[in-house]
Amino acid sequence: MKYLLSLLILLNITDGVLTHFVIELGLGSEGNPFLLNLVGEPSFIILKAVGAFVCAFILWDIHRRHPRLAFFSTSVFVAFYIGIVTWNSAVFLL
Image 1 (cartoon, rainbow, N blue to C red):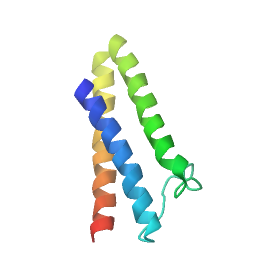
Image 2 (cartoon, one colour):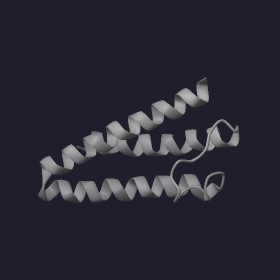
Image 3 (spheres, rainbow, N blue to C red):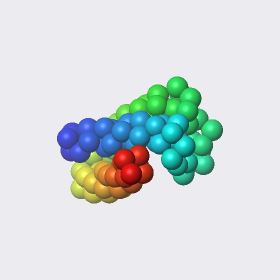
Image 4 (cartoon, rainbow, N blue to C red):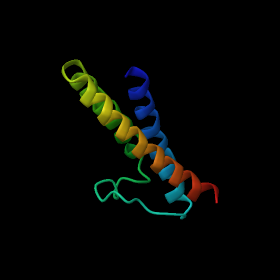
């Protein structure tokens, strides 16, 4: 579970960094309406990192009481962020 949560944090931060560069280069736009106004600001990456750590902490807390639920949920989030990072990488590299 620790490795899965670490991967989730890494993928979330990677998403933020790639999104920043994709938008700075004019290759795309932010799909999350809550973060739309923050992209390009220094606080964007900080917010993504803090949010990732808070989510990991919450999932770890859930894991103590409901390990199977937490493992399943974290796996789904990791798969989701793998898709997002792959998409952003494709946009950035192509």
